[in-house]
Amino acid sequence: MLLWSSTKFLGKESFVAESTERPHVLMMSEITADGKLTLKKGCSSKILMKYMDPATDVLLHRTRAAYDAIMVGSNTIRIDNSYLTVRSVEGKNPIRVIPASMADIPPGSNVLSPDAPTIIAVSERAPPGRVQELRDAGAIIVVAGTDHVSLPRLMQILTADFAIHKLMIEGGPTLNWHMLHHRLVDEIRLIHLPFIVGGSDTPSLVGGMHIESEEEMIRLALKNFYLCGTNLVTEYDVLYTGGGSGDAARTG
Image (cartoon, rainbow, N blue to C red; front, side, top):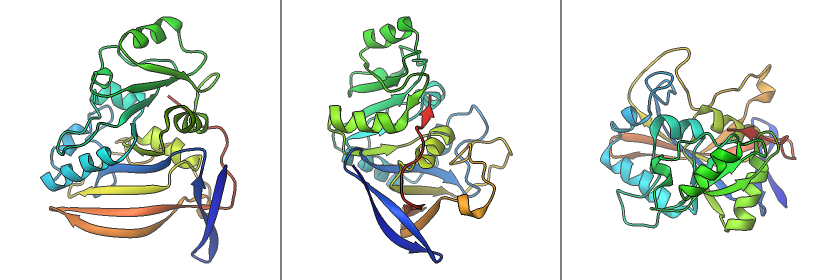
């Protein structure tokens, strides 16, 4: 059941999703002063992350430890080859969730290490051979869509079948856009890095967002900001204008 609590933003009634069928979702990311995630297209975000203050790195890992699961897109896995574990603080590793419609994740990826369970969501079109390779590598496979992974369906599966009630995403622009577009993000936490990268095709926090008017903008309500070491951190609630949920999301 998806519930909506209303608030006012710029004179308009907006809604914050309160779902009993899906996890509460936090989007967390480091970004440069001009909103970039990496140095250039196809480049690992780890290059920028190494400039985070040690206190901010602790914040990131403390957040991971506080959540049931962490999700990134398949492209992030192919580029960054992340472990998605808790390292800078003591705490339990979250379950790792990767939407990959065609099961196109290398079976030797670090995310398939035995440090924590890894759920890979695929579509019915995923090649059986690839799916079996990932199973053999230790992945838990769930089917969450016909041609593409449906993110709303995946969220329901995570809660119903895996008792995941708190999910953080450290996604790239494609996953972030689909999650926001389909009203699946509740909060955003940004770690601001004091750099300007530039580049019209350099990945930014959200991609794929083509709007025709300000009415289509996704509105945020700033609820906190603070210095964590030398990095500014901002925290927002995500507001959705009008009730109801989006169309079936597809990603991976």
